[in-house]
Length: 143
Ligand code: RB5
Figure 1 (cartoon, protein in one colour):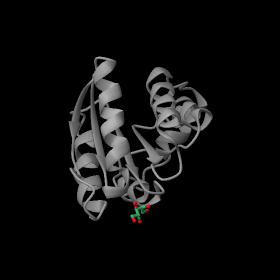
Figure 2 (figure 1 turned 60 degrees about the vertical axis):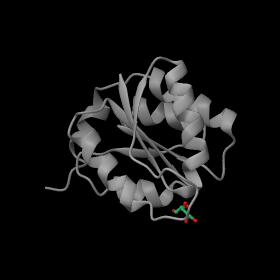
Figure 3 (figure 1 turned 90 degrees about the vertical axis):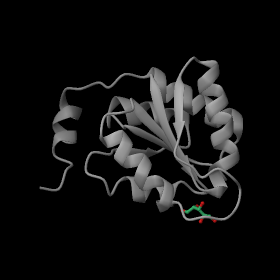
């Protein structure tokens, strides 16, 4: 499994912890940036990450900014992306079970590291339920 990651400066420190955690789980990663805590603009990293996940080159993505909102809004501009802003384990579980989210988004300034890593684990270990949820997902793209 290979996971694409992206963040802005507000999510940089948490992203490093998430990458470490993924490597400990034996998961490969590709970091689309940013690569420091220097102030930057989240769309510069969200768009390349979204395009890469959409292309099928990665199994899924994990993204974060301060609130999660800016990066989440940007990722969801891509038709093939279902990015889910998740700040609890239950929301992350439902993002997989019901929304088959292909990018997990977290609010780095509003959750602690321990919570974030638990959210990552729940997201990765929860399968999509399919059924009625697949029908709803099929109706999401703007046609
Ligand atoms: C950066 O200060 C902050 O605005 C950004 O990380 C994010 O919260 C935007 O939605």
